[in-house]
Amino acid sequence: MNHETAKEIEIAIAQWFGYREHVIVPNVSWGFLTYEADLLVLSSSGYAWEVEIKISRGDLVRDKHKRHNHESRKVRQLWFAIPEKLTNCIDHVPERAGVLVVSTDGKVRELRKPTANEFAIKLTDAQQFQIARLGAMRVWDLKKRISKSCNAVQQTLAAELLTGKASESISEQSQPAEA
Image (tube, rainbow, N blue to C red; front, side):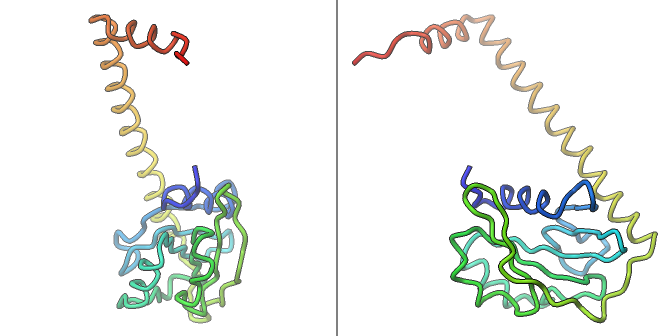
């Protein structure tokens, strides 16, 4: 794992913010924002922080042309999370945004702190619940997909065992390699 894919960066960032201390939900729009936030972090004080994940220079450049500019009264802090290889491209990140850099070994360092949105509102209990509910729905959807994948793998292995292909595969792996 080199921590350069969006999913790898997403996991590293969620760990850095602390998913035991904060509600952290990926891919939030769904009636909450007018655009999609890659990650939304709910602070214990009731404010939302947005994390935009970028994995290429082109992705950073294209983001500068988005109509919404990551501006919302519902977002107190904006962060951009990038892989280490993009550290020299932070001039494409809005000045108000914090910058988090994920190293190839998954460590996160804060390159720049964000400037707080002074117009941001504290989220109501209903808004916070909406975000938490969306996060919980994502967990159950993920469990369903994992279960389907596990069932498919089990069915494939069972079929291979019945046809003898699994034992051939295992015996091939246990044979010493020829020099």
